[in-house]
Amino acid sequence: MSAYPDFVARFYNVIYDRLRSSVDHAYYLKQLTSAEGPVLEVGVGTGRLFKDAWSANADIYGVDLSEAMLKIARTQPGIEPHRLISGDIRTMQLGKSFSRIVAPFRVFGHLVSLEDQLIALDVISRHLTKNGTFVFDVFVPDAVLCTKGLEPTLDFDGFWTDGCYLRRTTSVCPDYLNQINHVSMQYEWYENGRDCSGTRDFPMRYFFRYELEHLIGRSPLTLDSLNGDFEGGGLETGSKEFVVVCRL
Image (cartoon, rainbow, N blue to C red):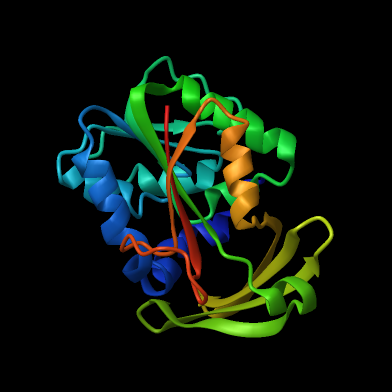
């Protein structure tokens, strides 16, 4: 796992409010606000979900590896800064238990090795109350993307502030044997009278259905459900998401 560069953190909300919030926001907001007791968001980032759960009176805490992301999250009006904690899903020791823990938007895919995945599940279980739930999502592997990759493709073209453009181009180099997509995101933006650019490269691990079931089976958790979307639909041809609900 790696921290986000400052420029990625700055533009995160602008990009993903357009590309992601319509997909998962309502689902995770319900997960965070319907739990009976404190909740934790792992990979809280800039607070895309956290801020609305907090506004809806959830007793919520958040953890993230990236200080650049947390710095933005802490600027949200009214949020108690101590609730946003710098930490790693593999090593966090919060001294507190939660009735529900969520890891939205592919957080688990940043755990590349089997060892890290099992360690993370063990750490999560130690932060759950009895019968507490852990909810996360990863993408259903696309056969073409995972074998042929993706040529540089413009996936965001807009503005980050008045009159200042922002573009992002994404490419993928696959490592099918190790189930890793090596992702490269090229950012271009206009600021202070000049054109700027930056690149973020990172590996993204992907999982298959029965691999996920076996992975949970090796952890202290029990698999409650494995759905194919954020509306509770079952897995079927064309499903884009694995939405995983586990219980201690």
